[in-house]
Length: 251
Picture (spheres, rainbow, N blue to C red):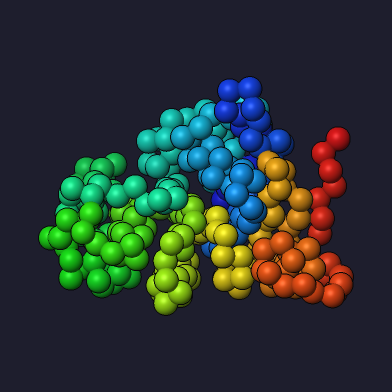
């Protein structure tokens, strides 16, 4: 079942278009990666989906309902939550207060949601009363993800969750993303660590200059020569496109 459907999405900042007719989908239960260089339009796509930006044209559907005309707080209540690039935690509030704010749409903080995030991130349980601004970078990323999970979303949008983290923490974060998905949450992942993202994702799309130029199963995109050269730092010999397919240029 298609949980998220994006069709012919055009988003602009003033007179400058950042997305030019972008279309892709995410099926329920999947991890889907959205790859691309800086400025390709990845964050713009996530912000448009989550209601922080209004598209110029096109549509976004979540669980069959059109959401691109709805405000962000309504979209959160439908079960779609974004973890932004840069984390954006409340640094002068405690870990516990940050988590409780994540459940603002609930009439009261659900005990099972707190239990779940502390099981996923036991380090946060140990630092529950600590100011969020005093956490390490990895702990702050854990808190940003845990805060988003307090809404018990059906779809979690993750924008560069490994940015600025040491390799050991990157492995831990990606292991947790896989666990979140195994527990039933669908994930749309924007990530510059393409090698790890493609190992984790069932399917992936490549954005260039605001357009989807390549799509396919994650494992097969990882073997694609163009992707290997551009994102994996590998000067590969041609191996064919296998299951990945190139998008035709827009008319």
